[in-house]
Amino acid sequence: MGLFTRMETVFKSKMNKVLNMMEDPRETLDYSYERQLEMLQNVKRGVAEVATSKKRLQLQRAKLVQNTDKLEGQARDAVAAGREDLARLALERKAALQQQVEGIDREITELDQQQEKLVESEKRLSTKVEIFRTRKESIKAQYSAAEAQVKINESVTGISEEMADVGLALERAENKTEEMKARAEAIDELMEAGTLEDLTGGRDEIDRELAKISTKTSVESELARLKAEAGKGPEKEKTEGTEERKEV
Image 1 (cartoon, rainbow, N blue to C red):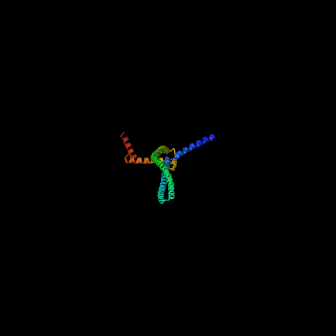
Image 2 (tube, one colour; image 1 turned 90 degrees about the vertical axis):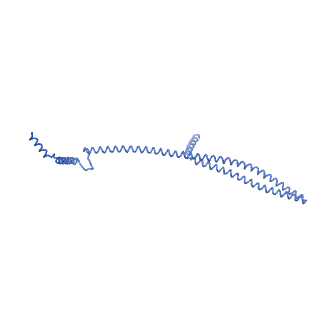
Image 3 (cartoon, helix red, strand yellow; image 1 turned 180 degrees about the horizontal axis):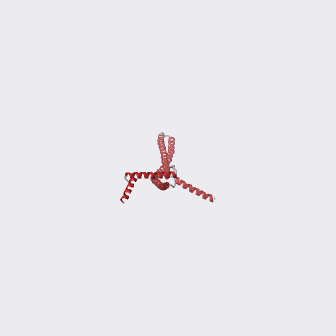
């Protein structure tokens, strides 16, 4: 039984924690304010009902007083007519009506006291409700401002974390780019040295050697042409060599 009680306590504690996280205090405050308004309306309704009941009794009393005055007049007429029996009957009815008037007066007095208490309660409750409303709006405004600040801070934090991830991604991209460039340069050097075959060019080792010879022949031909144009061709070099030997 003790274990079950502890488990129930833990469960309730966790449920309260979850509900507290889900609860919006602004909605709670609005709900409390609505409940207070309902109570205030009930008090006002009670004041109106008491006032209505008192008014009804006052009308009833006025009617009884009117009947009492009528019986008073009838008693006088009976006495004047020598009908003492009728005068006595009228006075008996008058006395009965006066008792009713006195009872109504007591009820009206009680209703007056009750109405005064309800009016005072209404005033106090109305003041409390207005104070609560002002405080409620202030708390709601503060909560909304704090909530907005939290969202801004969370957004800034998220942006900072995202920028950090972007920075790492840029760094990795730069490293991979440098690595790829170094690899490309190394492959170019190996291909120029003939260590690797350029499969895309469709050449083998013989083709490369022939290409080198062709390039060298072309260079020599261009060099000979330039020498001839400058007067440094093979014939002139041979003539100059003969003349130098004759002088010696």
